[in-house]
Length: 178
Length: 355
Image 1 (cartoon, chains in turn yellow, purple):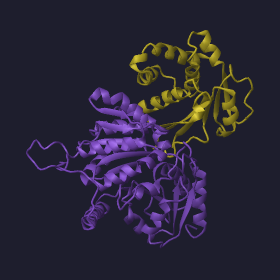
Image 2 (cartoon, each protein chain N blue to C red; image 1 turned 180 degrees about the vertical axis):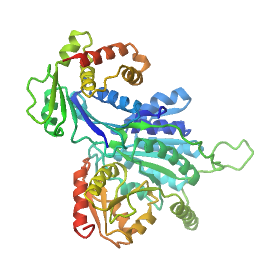
Image 3 (cartoon, one colour; image 1 turned 45 degrees about the horizontal axis):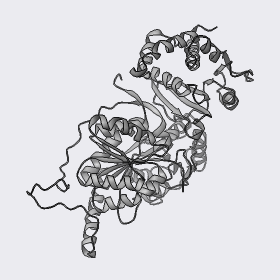
Image 4 (tube, chains in turn purple, orange; image 1 turned 90 degrees about the vertical axis):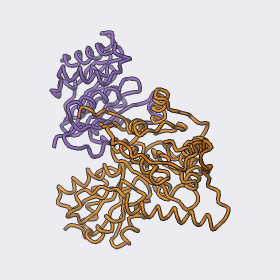
């Protein structure tokens, strides 16, 4: 049975929940079983935000991600908090603009992406989250134009249709980042 | 699967209620169920419905009483402390035999407690919540799909039996997103000749009231109500059995606890432990029959709960204490981990389960 657990974390306003929602919707459109569970509560206002996403070929049991296969850390407190939780052999994506230290685990693969810096330089300052998602999809070999366009159409409301191209650009920037 | 959408459990409840024909929502915000009110605030005005944020929970439940008396589908939603405030109204609605849907997205208690998920309102829900002899239908969803489908079912049952139905969820079920299909079967049309819709000078007045000052009359309505409850107990229980055919240990869990328990059961099965689960979907009426049957087969029961142990009492009653029942729990807003449940299963296996 194939199941992947993702944990997205950072601070409120970075689009952590949106990044997770994008991935969950992509799974839904590929007819996989999915769950998305956010942290909720007072800590969301200016503090840390996180959400767990599970993509599975079988019905999802517990939706609570305690041992992620993939961790996206978009600030230092998130990496500090969740680095040890990552499953051995897992993957960490870190926003190296905001996280200056290196990952200390040796049994995981880490990708450092200066996503916040890239987003600012490319005129899409609010989309560092999607730059990392682009890289994540490329690494997992799940970056497919068709699925991405369809998923963006689902998660971005018609009211914000002008954000479609910006999101596509962010995902591409991330996917192309070496 | 193209017709499935990704929704939060709270939103799924709200959309399903609208699909079920509910056009009246009265509530007051409280974490972790506020998305229900927010969704209704957005949608109701567009479809000619009524969304009203009341000045308090007490006001909201009495508005529900009023609309229910007219025979229209109506609901309210809250979380634990807010449900306590509504308990008086729930008792009055029971006394007046009024149907409505009540949603409790539970958080830790007692008192103001916390805002993280909990199942510690089991007693309150299954024993009615307010004063007097009465019951509520209590439905416990374990997925976002069930948040939707049990909402529709709840309205149907409430109308059919003229009583309140409660969706007993928790913060996790309310906040999580899963794929959900909003394709529901056509609701059964229930005639409500008792509703106060205006006589048009063509019939006697309908009176909706919970005051019966003559003891013999009050006793009669209580006895009649309990005949209805007995019928419901015999006909409306819902549950799911998971790997129970050869089980020697029976886990009992509802809602989010059943999701966690399923992970632990799958792991225990890999270790050769014969364990299964009964997941009550109706908490009242409690699925007595499958537990009674299991008591003749299994060696022990484990009740997995996000409380100090409340459903465990119903399991002991249902099984007449024939086999040991142990508790595996966390409280205060914490969810047991699959590892904790697995340990409880392993311990039960060692103490005379599978060896």
